[in-house]
Image (cartoon, rainbow over all chains, first blue to last red; front, side, top):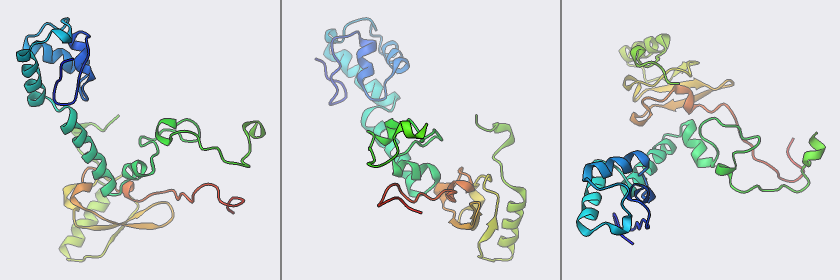
Amino acid sequence: MPRLLGVDIPNDKQVVYSLQYLYGVGPAIARDACVKTKINPTKKARELDEDELSRLASLLERDFTVEGPLRRQVGQAIHRLREIKCYRGMRHKLGLPVRGQRTRTNARTRKGPRKTVAGKKGVKDLR
Amino acid sequence: MGRSTKKGPYVDPKLFAKLIKARETNSSQAITTWARRCTIVPEFVGATFMVHNGKAHIKVFVTEDMVGHKLGEFAPTRTFRGHGGKGGKK
C-alpha cells in the first residue's frame, strides 16, 4: 500500500477516496488535489507511482493544512480557549458539549459511556 | 447566525465611555458592569472589569487572547456542585 505524508497508508480504492483517509482531507480537498496534480481521480491508489505520490505529498503539505500541523492547530485553538478560561474553554475542560446542546439527555459523545448511579430513581419512577 | 460585519462588533456604548473616562483619570479600579453581551475589543486589553453573573460581579482581567469574545463568557452564571455523594446534597 502506498504511503503518503509519513504514517498514512490509504488502501486500494480510487485516489479521490483513499486520499480522504488522511486527517484533514475531505471530498473537496481530495478532488482539488487530483486536479492540481493532474492525476486521474478514478485511478486506484495502488497504481500510483513514486512521482505521483511525491507530487501529491508536496501539494498537500504546501497548499493545505493536513495531518500533524492541522492536529496541532486544532489543539492550540482548544488550548487557547482553556487558557483564557472562557465558557467554551470550561466546557472543553469538563468534557461537556461546547455549543449549547442539551445535557439532560444525550450528549453521550462528549460525556462517554453512561455512569449508572446506584439508588437513583429509575426511568419508570420519573414518569 | 453571526452578526453582520457591516455593523462591526457590538460594544456597549456606556461601558466604553466608562473605560475612556477611567483611562483619562488614570484610575486602575475595576469597572463594574452588567454588559455581558459587550464584545471585548483591543482597547479593553489590560483593563479589569467586574462582570455581573446574575448574582455577583466577577473580576475579569482582560488579556490579549480574550479579544473577540464577549465579557459574559468569563463570568459563569451557573455553579456545578457535583453529582452524588452520600444521600445527595441539600
